Image (tube, rainbow, N blue to C red; front, side, top):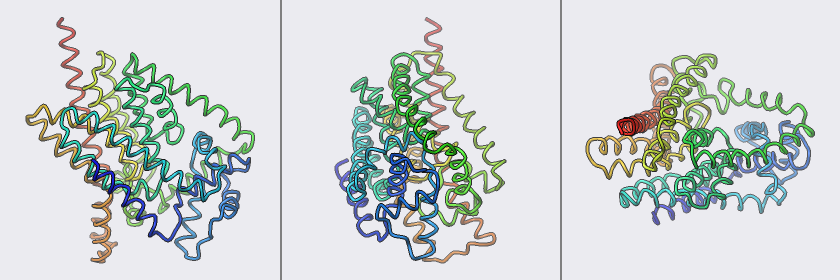
Length: 429
């Protein structure tokens, strides 16, 4: 764990130090929240471009840099996100940037160590190897410092607080902040706690109350300063998700994503039907069916820690599948390690299956394998058109969503079986 933590910091900060361009995700969030605080329109590209230049941002000279800046100044963050970041955006960018990067790194490290503190009770060495190797392959969380990194870390920290019944107020605030930053990152985890009932439900409802304390003033503020913000946000989303756009899950953009591949099922379904009116509903329907299959039986029994960790493992993988996420968002899979640890300690065929499936999920959402693979593609100069081009698109698009789907189905099936056994035992008494 110590070696993994050191490597995580070294790799992340080395990438930042050798990179010639600024952290666009950080500056984009900074200027959007600064606009929000200063009462300009954070969803209007012209306003954000002026804020970008005023914050010291340099206009790129190359075409790719100009295109990237164009996308980064099309704000997709919700008003709740901007409200959370507003205090940081009032600092000079030269100070806000390192603070944000350090906060991102510290939060993820804390989340990983908390997960190991749980998993080490059953399988200390193997769980340390898994989380430590994942840390080595998570430098992208620092090098991009995308909001998803902090959101997923806060979600994991909140889950630990709820499950351990320790530092409950801190867990409530962490869950609320995670939901405010990226609701699609932690929303299903929150929903799972809500359905569990008892103390877990109270914690979920308290988190919702804290979120409301953030959301209501933010929505009133944005409605006053930018009355057309919903239309502008929708236009920005259409630009990002258009065919060939930077966030397009379809095959038209598959070769341009670099190492940050798409995690949602749309990336797979669009390979066969590249039409949003087809791949979006199909993806939503599949994920809804999985969610119901996992969550519905929960109401029948009193939750136990071991079963709940297994359910959380399924939900963590499922969270990456319905809507847009990138490969670095899938680091939420550290939430699966306590469940894997308990299954491994029990031994038997299920333990071996858990090792293979957990290992595949960790491998395909890691940084270094994708970096080496992209470097190999560039070196071999593989064709990007024709049958071989389609095969290359499939190789780039399929592994992450499908591995997450398998992780979700596996832990979901184990969770359902444990729930059914407990329910039958309770009924017989």
